[in-house]
Amino acid sequence: MNHDDHPLDRLLRQEILLARERVYRFGRPTPLEPLILNGPGPEIWVKREDLSTVKSYKWRGACNRMAMLTPGEIKRGVVTASAGNHAQGVALAAQTLGIRARIYMPRSTPKVKQNAVLQHGGEFVEIHLSGDSYDDAVQAARKDEAETGAVYIHAYDDLHVMAGQGTLADEIILSGHGPFDAAYLQIGGGGLAAGVSTWLKTYWPEIEIIGVEGDGQASMKAALEVGKPVALDQVDLFCDGTAVRKAGDLPFQICRNTLSRIETVTNAEVSHAIRILWEGLRCISEPSGAMGLAAVLKNRSQLTAKRVLVVLCGANIDFLQLGNIAQSIGATNQTSRTLRVRIPERPGAMLELLDTCFAGINIADFQYGKTDDLEAWPVFTVTAENPAAVEAMPAKLDAGGYVWQDLTGSVDVVFRAIPLRGDLLKNPAFLRLDFYDRPGALHDFLGQRIQGNANLCYFNYRQSGERIGRALIGLDFPSPFEREALLMTIPDHGEGYRLCKQLDEATSTRLTGKPF
Image 1: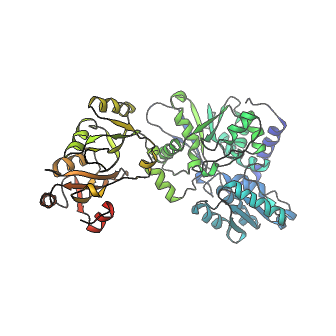
Image 2: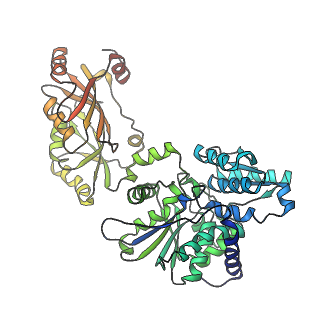
Image 3: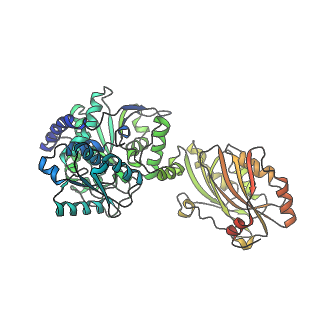
């Protein structure tokens, strides 16, 4: 994949120059900002396309293409398919130019993107939700094109769309912050990578251009391997803005000459990159927007002391998805591991485990429900900034004589399926505990407040990043007297926690499956 001067490359460069005269009627240049990492690593510069009018780079290509429509084409109107960001660019151009546009989007398109299309397009746009994927939307839009004669505005497989995207690279060149040793460019259909790589290579021939795709959506990688665009059987939708089954033909012809290689990144690595962008620049990226940085962080040690460019290509993320990403283990900057440990089912056994093998380590998630009279299998997700501390956990458990299993990524843990056999409980009490989420607070509560023959029968806790940690705890007692005696000794508020409240009987019944 070496860069040579092909006719299509020359034509694209010419069209990028001409696009300069069109796109700034619709939007303004976006800033290029440094991202500072803690510790050794590359010098990273981020092109902030999330600050554009439509919160993504897609306005550039869509507006450039629509500004070239003839009077006859304008009369016919336009139709397009989009996962959301290209649709906003088309809507912006439609409103500005007074062109009618029908936009087909998958039914799963985030509401934030649908609402933005209507906001930018106003009375000039119609949204049609069709199918469950971008490809389904394309089929519906192409059918509309054939039946009505409307002009189809492709999201990436169009020379003038690619040229419009290339204007962001022009701004990078003119910024004075270059040259860069490498640029990591995310790829869906390939329009961004084609336009930007062509322009960067024109002025900085020695720059290394790396394409970045999600593990479950690497359509350009597949195309480069076989020598032509091919359709993937399935496409992961986490990075919805790049979830394209088949790379564009024109972008493929460009990228096979300009890209040095393709890097793939996992959803967890993308989630981590989203967090780094928030912590470093206080910006919120959609998953596709953070893919370039995810690849840089993945290769951080090899890139030390180099100057690296990434494009934050969009910030159109559904608020609910943002919450899920923030709670995911992938979003943490710490090493994590999920372990299931066997302990005897007796009072004090859990605290003994925490005092020994888990001393000094952060417990990000704690799940347990009693299912046996003789043994318990609590599940812990542990994290640490120092990977060695997490890697040492198995040896510590082995040395303590514990039987354990690695459940990292296990489906039942991810979905918090916590089993509990109510028929094994004698005199249970369930408590909601709100404690100050600092090292040792939860341990101190269990060690100082839970005394006597109280036996832990249920525990549900997940670290949320708040100052207050919230846990649902179940305790079982040999007799009603011991149960009431302990509950009376625990005040509602105390040192290290601010609320300890017994759950009502109805809630306890739902948890255990039987009344008490």
